[in-house]
Image (tube, rainbow, N blue to C red; front, side):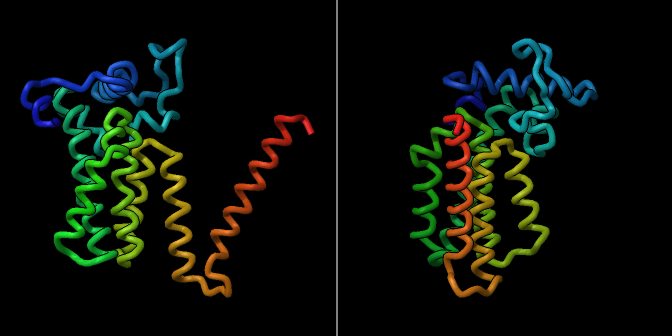
Length: 211
Protein backbone atom coordinates (compact mmCIF):
# COMPACT_ATOMS: atom_id res chain seq x y z
CA UNK A 1 0.00 0.00 0.00
CA UNK A 2 2.86 2.39 0.78
CA UNK A 3 5.32 1.07 -1.83
CA UNK A 4 3.11 2.03 -4.77
CA UNK A 5 2.89 5.77 -3.91
CA UNK A 6 6.65 5.86 -3.27
CA UNK A 7 7.42 4.23 -6.63
CA UNK A 8 4.88 6.32 -8.55
CA UNK A 9 5.64 9.62 -6.80
CA UNK A 10 2.08 9.84 -5.50
CA UNK A 11 0.45 10.76 -2.18
CA UNK A 12 -2.71 9.63 -0.43
CA UNK A 13 -5.70 11.89 -0.97
CA UNK A 14 -8.63 10.41 0.99
CA UNK A 15 -10.22 11.96 4.07
CA UNK A 16 -7.89 14.36 5.93
CA UNK A 17 -4.89 13.94 3.62
CA UNK A 18 -5.91 16.31 0.83
CA UNK A 19 -7.79 18.99 2.74
CA UNK A 20 -5.76 19.21 5.96
CA UNK A 21 -2.43 17.43 6.37
CA UNK A 22 -0.97 18.01 2.93
CA UNK A 23 -1.47 21.81 3.08
CA UNK A 24 -0.22 21.76 6.68
CA UNK A 25 2.98 19.88 5.79
CA UNK A 26 3.52 21.91 2.61
CA UNK A 27 3.26 25.32 4.28
CA UNK A 28 5.42 24.30 7.24
CA UNK A 29 8.10 22.84 4.97
CA UNK A 30 8.13 25.91 2.69
CA UNK A 31 8.58 28.25 5.64
CA UNK A 32 11.43 26.21 7.10
CA UNK A 33 13.12 25.83 3.71
CA UNK A 34 13.19 29.61 3.41
CA UNK A 35 14.69 29.96 6.88
CA UNK A 36 11.54 31.27 8.53
CA UNK A 37 9.98 30.00 11.75
CA UNK A 38 6.28 29.53 10.87
CA UNK A 39 4.66 31.61 13.58
CA UNK A 40 1.50 32.42 11.60
CA UNK A 41 -0.26 31.02 8.54
CA UNK A 42 -2.02 33.78 6.63
CA UNK A 43 -3.52 31.26 4.17
CA UNK A 44 -5.49 29.23 6.72
CA UNK A 45 -8.98 30.63 7.41
CA UNK A 46 -8.44 34.34 8.11
CA UNK A 47 -5.00 33.67 9.60
CA UNK A 48 -4.04 31.10 12.19
CA UNK A 49 -1.30 30.70 14.84
CA UNK A 50 0.97 28.06 13.37
CA UNK A 51 3.87 27.43 15.72
CA UNK A 52 1.38 27.26 18.62
CA UNK A 53 -0.52 24.46 16.88
CA UNK A 54 1.09 21.16 17.97
CA UNK A 55 -0.15 19.39 14.84
CA UNK A 56 2.27 21.35 12.65
CA UNK A 57 5.16 19.36 14.18
CA UNK A 58 7.70 22.12 13.60
CA UNK A 59 10.06 20.72 16.24
CA UNK A 60 9.36 17.03 15.52
CA UNK A 61 12.52 15.60 13.87
CA UNK A 62 10.78 13.07 11.54
CA UNK A 63 8.71 15.95 10.13
CA UNK A 64 11.96 17.51 8.87
CA UNK A 65 11.82 14.93 6.07
CA UNK A 66 9.55 17.45 4.34
CA UNK A 67 12.35 20.01 4.40
CA UNK A 68 15.03 17.81 2.80
CA UNK A 69 13.06 15.49 0.47
CA UNK A 70 10.60 16.03 -2.37
CA UNK A 71 7.16 16.52 -0.89
CA UNK A 72 5.48 13.42 -2.32
CA UNK A 73 8.36 11.18 -1.21
CA UNK A 74 8.49 12.71 2.26
CA UNK A 75 4.71 12.44 2.73
CA UNK A 76 4.51 8.71 2.06
CA UNK A 77 7.82 7.92 3.77
CA UNK A 78 6.68 9.78 6.91
CA UNK A 79 3.64 7.50 7.19
CA UNK A 80 5.63 4.36 6.38
CA UNK A 81 8.29 5.09 9.02
CA UNK A 82 5.70 5.52 11.75
CA UNK A 83 3.93 2.28 10.84
CA UNK A 84 7.34 0.55 11.00
CA UNK A 85 8.08 2.22 14.35
CA UNK A 86 4.73 1.03 15.72
CA UNK A 87 5.47 -2.53 14.61
CA UNK A 88 9.00 -2.62 16.06
CA UNK A 89 7.92 -1.06 19.34
CA UNK A 90 4.98 -3.43 19.60
CA UNK A 91 7.25 -6.44 19.11
CA UNK A 92 9.62 -5.24 21.86
CA UNK A 93 6.69 -4.65 24.21
CA UNK A 94 4.98 -7.99 23.59
CA UNK A 95 8.30 -9.84 23.77
CA UNK A 96 8.88 -8.20 27.16
CA UNK A 97 5.39 -9.09 28.38
CA UNK A 98 5.59 -12.69 27.15
CA UNK A 99 8.75 -14.01 25.46
CA UNK A 100 10.61 -13.26 22.20
CA UNK A 101 9.47 -15.28 19.23
CA UNK A 102 6.47 -16.07 17.10
CA UNK A 103 3.73 -15.13 19.56
CA UNK A 104 5.19 -11.66 20.18
CA UNK A 105 5.67 -11.18 16.43
CA UNK A 106 2.09 -12.24 15.69
CA UNK A 107 0.76 -9.85 18.33
CA UNK A 108 2.87 -6.99 16.93
CA UNK A 109 1.64 -7.65 13.39
CA UNK A 110 -1.96 -7.85 14.62
CA UNK A 111 -1.67 -4.49 16.38
CA UNK A 112 0.20 -2.76 13.57
CA UNK A 113 -2.23 -3.79 10.84
CA UNK A 114 -5.39 -3.70 12.92
CA UNK A 115 -8.31 -1.57 11.80
CA UNK A 116 -7.85 1.15 14.44
CA UNK A 117 -4.12 1.47 13.72
CA UNK A 118 -4.58 1.56 9.94
CA UNK A 119 -7.35 4.15 10.30
CA UNK A 120 -4.72 6.51 11.74
CA UNK A 121 -2.97 6.70 8.37
CA UNK A 122 -5.21 9.61 7.39
CA UNK A 123 -4.70 11.49 10.67
CA UNK A 124 -0.92 11.48 10.70
CA UNK A 125 -0.42 13.37 13.97
CA UNK A 126 -2.41 10.64 15.77
CA UNK A 127 -0.42 7.94 13.99
CA UNK A 128 2.91 9.57 14.84
CA UNK A 129 2.03 9.98 18.52
CA UNK A 130 0.54 6.49 18.81
CA UNK A 131 3.54 4.89 17.09
CA UNK A 132 5.80 5.81 20.01
CA UNK A 133 3.53 4.38 22.73
CA UNK A 134 4.66 0.71 22.63
CA UNK A 135 8.29 1.80 22.78
CA UNK A 136 7.60 4.12 25.72
CA UNK A 137 5.82 1.34 27.61
CA UNK A 138 8.71 -1.00 26.83
CA UNK A 139 11.13 1.58 28.27
CA UNK A 140 9.02 1.81 31.44
CA UNK A 141 8.81 -1.96 31.88
CA UNK A 142 12.37 -2.74 30.85
CA UNK A 143 14.14 -0.18 33.04
CA UNK A 144 15.60 1.69 30.05
CA UNK A 145 17.94 4.60 30.67
CA UNK A 146 16.51 7.96 31.61
CA UNK A 147 17.80 9.47 28.37
CA UNK A 148 16.19 6.79 26.18
CA UNK A 149 12.87 6.99 28.03
CA UNK A 150 12.83 10.79 27.96
CA UNK A 151 13.66 10.83 24.25
CA UNK A 152 10.80 8.46 23.38
CA UNK A 153 8.32 10.44 25.52
CA UNK A 154 9.47 13.76 24.03
CA UNK A 155 9.16 12.43 20.49
CA UNK A 156 5.61 11.28 21.18
CA UNK A 157 4.76 14.72 22.58
CA UNK A 158 6.32 16.60 19.67
CA UNK A 159 4.47 14.41 17.15
CA UNK A 160 1.44 16.60 17.67
CA UNK A 161 -1.49 14.81 19.32
CA UNK A 162 -1.77 16.04 22.94
CA UNK A 163 -4.86 13.99 23.87
CA UNK A 164 -3.23 10.67 22.98
CA UNK A 165 -0.09 11.74 24.78
CA UNK A 166 -2.04 12.74 27.89
CA UNK A 167 -3.56 9.26 28.08
CA UNK A 168 -0.11 7.74 27.66
CA UNK A 169 1.29 9.95 30.42
CA UNK A 170 -1.43 8.78 32.79
CA UNK A 171 -0.72 5.12 32.00
CA UNK A 172 3.05 5.42 32.45
CA UNK A 173 2.63 7.49 35.63
CA UNK A 174 0.43 4.80 37.19
CA UNK A 175 2.93 2.09 36.23
CA UNK A 176 5.94 3.95 37.62
CA UNK A 177 4.08 5.01 40.77
CA UNK A 178 3.07 1.41 41.49
CA UNK A 179 6.65 0.25 40.98
CA UNK A 180 8.63 2.83 42.92
CA UNK A 181 6.35 4.48 45.51
CA UNK A 182 5.40 2.31 48.49
CA UNK A 183 1.80 2.63 49.62
CA UNK A 184 -0.82 0.44 51.21
CA UNK A 185 -3.37 0.51 48.38
CA UNK A 186 -1.93 -0.67 45.03
CA UNK A 187 -4.71 1.17 43.18
CA UNK A 188 -4.20 4.43 45.05
CA UNK A 189 -2.99 6.57 42.15
CA UNK A 190 -5.58 5.21 39.73
CA UNK A 191 -8.33 6.03 42.22
CA UNK A 192 -6.84 9.50 42.73
CA UNK A 193 -6.82 10.19 38.98
CA UNK A 194 -10.38 8.88 38.64
CA UNK A 195 -11.53 11.15 41.46
CA UNK A 196 -9.79 14.11 39.81
CA UNK A 197 -11.51 13.41 36.47
CA UNK A 198 -14.89 13.09 38.21
CA UNK A 199 -14.33 16.38 40.02
CA UNK A 200 -13.49 18.15 36.75
CA UNK A 201 -16.55 16.64 35.03
CA UNK A 202 -18.86 17.76 37.87
CA UNK A 203 -17.49 21.29 37.75
CA UNK A 204 -17.95 21.45 33.99
CA UNK A 205 -21.56 20.29 34.31
CA UNK A 206 -22.23 22.87 37.03
CA UNK A 207 -20.70 25.61 34.89
CA UNK A 208 -22.80 24.62 31.86
CA UNK A 209 -26.00 24.52 33.93
CA UNK A 210 -25.21 27.83 35.60
CA UNK A 211 -25.38 26.35 39.10
